Each structure stands twice: as C-alpha cells, then as structure tokens.
Image (cartoon, rainbow, N blue to C red; front, side, top):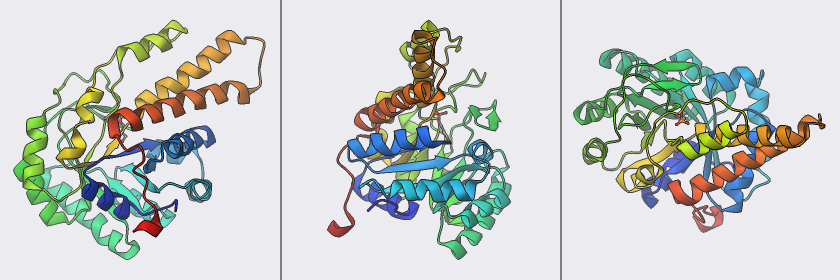
Length: 314
Ligand code: 13P
C-alpha cells in the first residue's frame, strides 16, 4: 500500500467522515517532510503540485514519477493531486502527466462559464479515470500564481446545480477560508452555516476546503524573531477546520503554515551557525520544521492519526 487514486482517497474519507490533509510540495525536502510526517502517524495523505510548483520542479512528469517512487517506501495511502489548474488545458496536461486527481479552478468565471469549462475537464478526465475537483464561490487571497481580491460564500443551491450539471468528483467551496491568509480587503469569517447548508444539499458528496492553513500569530512571531518581517494575516482557526470532516469536507489544503515552519527552521539554522555554508544543513532544519507542522495538522486538524488503511483489509 502506498500510492492510491484520488477517487479512492475521497471515497474512504467520505465513508469515514474525516478530511484528508492535502499539502503542496516542490522538492525533496518538502516531499519527505510530508511522507515521513504522515507515515509516523499512520495517516493517509494527499500530496499536491501547484502550477507554481510545476514550474519550480522544471519537469513535472519526472518529478511526479520521483514522488510516486518515493511514496512506495511508506506504508500509508498517498494520492497525488494537481492543485489549481487555471484552464482546462492545464488540467488536461496534468491528467496526461499521471496525476490521479486534478483541480480545475473556474471560480473566477461566471457560473455558466465555470460549468462549461468544468464539463470540458470532466469529459477529458473520463479518458484517464481521473478525479476532478472544481471550485465554486470566491476564496480571497494569494494562492501561488492565483489571486482573488474578492470573497464570496458558495451558494448552496448553486453548488447543487453545479455538481449535477458538471458531474465533477469533488467541489471546493468558499465558507470563509482564505488563500495564504493574505490581506485581501474582502474578508469573510468562517461560516458553519454556509458549510452545513451546502452539506445538506450534497450529503454524500466530497467537499473540499482550500485556504485551510491558520497562520497563527505565534508562528509568525517565531519567524519574525529570527529576522523575518512577515506581515500578520488572518485566516480560519484550526479548531474550526478540525470540525469540518463531520460536515462533508473530505480534503483540506493547508500550506502556508508549513512554509512558515520551514522558513523558521532555515532562519534559526543560519542565525545559530553563521559559519556553516552547506545547504544540506539548513535545508534539513527547514524540512524538520515542515514535517513537525504536517504532524501537527494530522494530529490536531485532520484527526487522521491511524486512519491509514491497508489494501489487504479492504
Ligand atoms: P493555504 O493558503 O491556507 O495554505 O491553503 C493552500 C491551498 O488552498 C492550496 O490550494
């Protein structure tokens, strides 16, 4: 057991009423941090590559092959999803690369255009048996190469219509989280009312949360005490995200807190060992910070400790 499809991952989460943590990676250190962290807690995990990550790794096909081969060393279910494809063609490229799930983000489009473009992606996905995550509503903030200054809760009635018409596999909704927790002007508080109404309309359908990192001020403090000047940003509380598995959320994307912990590790190492110049030394501390945060999210937010299943047991 190790590499499983996104469809399998989502159906297990839906059945078990838990949310699988999804983390973006882009190099060996971040990949190992996720695989080791999840494996030590015996948790299923979704590993993602974003459009920015795709550029960063230079050759995403080879990088995906590398990630899959590394995942085989860990006895936990790992699924690979391509995060935030801004166009149907980017999503179709990701399917051809070998991701078992792709996210097509048509949320900046009008409702009808979003349906039309998502349908194109779903149709193509049929040829590859790939899961398609769509998005409806507006999540504010920066996500990698994507920015929205506008926040808008997903309308439950529209979500039902969207899912029925597009036949997407899962739906990312806007319930008050924000990407990167940045200082987008338009901010909406996290709303269980919105989430519950969407879940009522789509009771057996996997919902997804983006922007589920929490940017706690003490974490930003830690980075800034080591010379950082990271602005204080607001986002949802971990305790709120932790309740969402019961309400149809099967996957939560959380990155920024991991990135802050990696930065903290690198900054501390460089400050404490200013005579050293071997990049492996400070990257190793970055990796440790990232891994600790992955384990924190698994233990305290997704609550997926020991939820790794065995193929033999299925
Ligand atoms: P954060 O910006 O909260 O880390 O969420 C990441 C995300 O949604 C990636 O798609």
